[in-house]
Amino acid sequence: MERLQVIDKLKTLIEEEREITIDNNDQKLDIDSFTMTLIISVVNDEIGVMLDMETLDFDVFTSLNSLADLISAEQKKEIS
Image 1 (cartoon, one colour):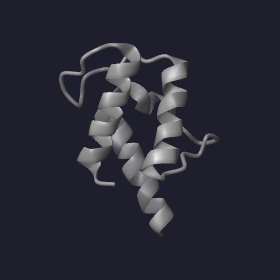
Image 2: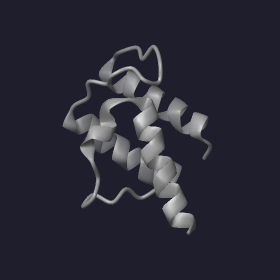
Image 3: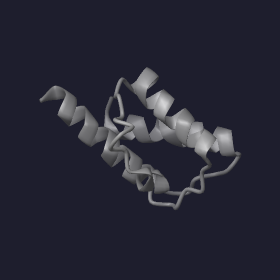
Image 4: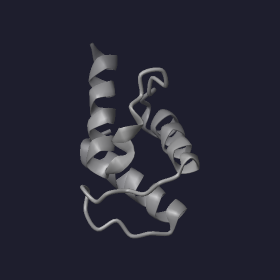
């Protein structure tokens, strides 16, 4: 899945779950642990990227861009 598609999917998910509007991809996200778990599940099930829970830095859950960067890096690892 392309970066912009990932961002759009995550944006929609977070906006619906948190009932907020995300104005830009660098906006600081204020999400709870349930939403984090939901994101991890969607990334695995719908985007096809397994995030390593042992090394996952939860600070990446601060913006759509940081989440997209993480997913992109994990996709590259899986291809290698």
